[in-house]
Image 1 (cartoon, rainbow, N blue to C red):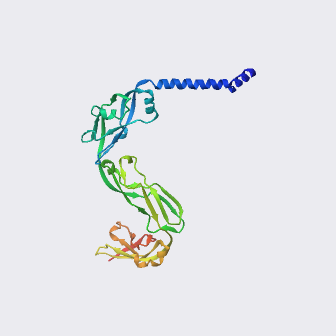
Image 2: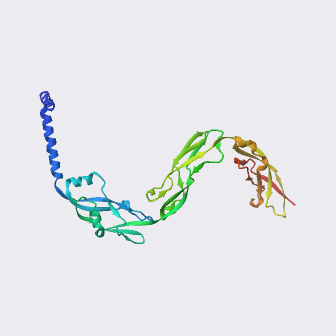
Image 3: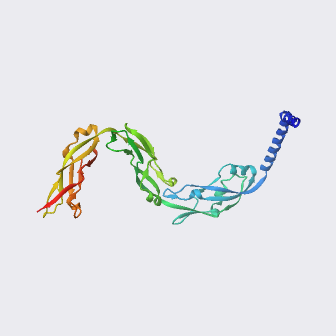
Amino acid sequence: MKDIKSRFLRFVSSKKINVFALFLALSFTILILNKLSRTFTNTITFSVNTVNIPETFVVLNDSSQQLNVTLKTYGFKFLRYYLSSPKLTVDYDDKLSLTDSTFSWNQQRSYSKINDQFDKDVEVISISPDVLKFKYDENATKDIPVVLNKKVQFSPGYDVLKGFTITPDTIHVVGPEKILKALTHIETVPLDLKDVHLDIGQTLKLELPENKDHIQFSHESVRLSAKVEKFTEGVFNIPVAIKNVPSNLSLKYYPKSVSVSYYTNLDGFKDVQEKDFKVECDYAKHLENQSYLVPELVAKPESVKSAKIIQQKIEFIITE
């Protein structure tokens, strides 16, 4: 066994094997060239590329259309179709039939236009199917609001007073009316921020719908900005007013005022005043046999981001 192994290794390392491999490669190359130089007849599937579509229409299914073309030519010519995704062009200016919902392409009427797309030494034997139908829809326009998809966590004591600004906050779209009717808004890609304490300013891409190929968008991204500020809390004691009390009733209620806590930016804290808050109870909203009213905060300063009433019940009795 050792002797056989030793002889094989000497044969492999010798020049004889290199000469043998060279002749083998040459023989294989000549065989392939001989095959490719012969004439073959075969059927190739071509995808359809549409051109010169009228501006008032949009084709809904052109990417799914195919033509099966039987060709006769040299093997070298066929090789190019197998190495790439072959396409043929259908011209909408080529006297296509128009109905209420489709354009119709007829191979007999457009045979010469298809034949012209092949080299002179490629013979077109047949084309199928005989007819292609392209569904279309009329273009429509629509302004669609942009919705921020966010998950933002601020550092303790920080927030935004005026919220987030999106520029532009609406985008103009052009496309099939049936598709645009279903579009109510466009979301941004998810924004996930943590421990935010500095101003926000960045560009966000839009989450475009799956059928975006049939729609033109004025923008595919928006600019997001927000001023991040230091915030603080304050508390005021606000008088309670009661409205919609029937004229034949007289009420006594307690407490006469409630504590209201509010949250605002540090720069505007000194400008917040008690008189800018208003708390009311609506007697018309109370339930029968219920001995209390629910206070509501009906007014607060614009500089206050949020506010809440600490006391949730106003007890009352009806007096004669």
